[in-house]
Each structure stands twice: as C-alpha cells, then as structure tokens.
Picture (cartoon, rainbow, N blue to C red):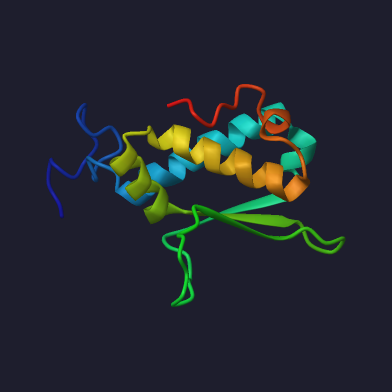
Length: 131
C-alpha cells in the first residue's frame, strides 16, 4: 500500500498499521510483566526463559486448559515458562479480570511453583483475589 495513509503521520507516527494485533498487544503485556519481575528478582528471572504460544498442546482427555507451562530447570538447561495467549485472553474476557493482572498472576504462580517459593516471595504485592 502506497500513499499518504501508509507513511508516518501524526496519526500513525511509524506508518501502518494503525492498530496492533491482539498477539502483539499480548506480547507487550508479557514483556512488561517479565520486566517488572526481573527488576524485583534479577537472579531468579535470569535463570528462566520465557516464551509465548497461542494455545497448549492438550491430550484428548484433558480436563483443564493451562495458562502457563514450565519445563527444564536442570543443571544443563534453564527453566522455561511458556505463557499461552488464547487461554489467558479468553479467561480475562470471561472473568472481567484485567489482562495484565491475569498475566502477572499466571507468571507469579508458575515461578513460585517452579522455584518452590510462595507467590508472595516472588511478588510481595501478589493477591490471587485482586483484580
């Protein structure tokens, strides 16, 4: 697409697209929350790799859809926490919870589980019932 609409302007400083995709917005929320955790616990977050996938691969007999999944944590590989975009987005829509609150809660709970710490040790402001 060429023309004035595709060039940078006061309405779209970087040009098109004028609106980011849901996936790009979700990626930004996860990055903000990981950065927030990294500032609070740099040594802990340095041992963890974070990734985002759209949906988890589930068995046919699965009864729950996870929001995150952790693997690794051996002496040869770091922990890897995968955040699943669509389940979190859908739960945020249905429950009325804010997307960033749900991402933060999922990350804190997964980190706490992986590292055998309480959620409050990961994030002193953590409140599972807060939204």
